[in-house]
Length: 117
Figure 1 (cartoon, helix red, strand yellow):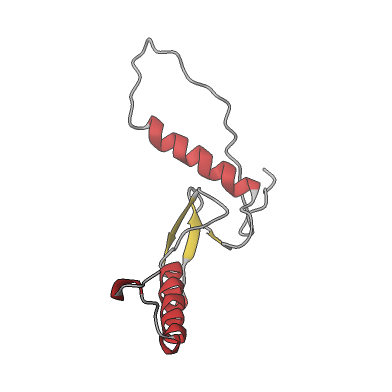
Figure 2 (figure 1 turned 180 degrees about the vertical axis):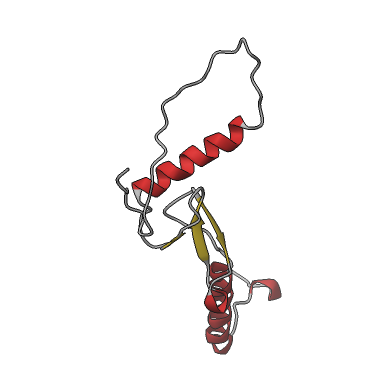
């Protein structure tokens, strides 16, 4: 079987620099991903020291560790604050039924634990 000029493989001397280039590009693309993989109820940006990715929970504004799960108290707080902002867009009239879904609005401490009321 004859090989044409378009089917020639790269010379072995170019393979290590090419693999290094692919690894550098992959690492750079991974650094641009500033999201919290453990919680969708966070807002992330590169405002940390040295441009590090920093995530804070909606509703409380507390910074969270991206590598661990977010506490239940902070998630409930974020859920309640999201619902309040949605409700502010719609003004029911005086004949409307109230949507009293019983969402719990917790008080959280600085570590994200429930505080006693």
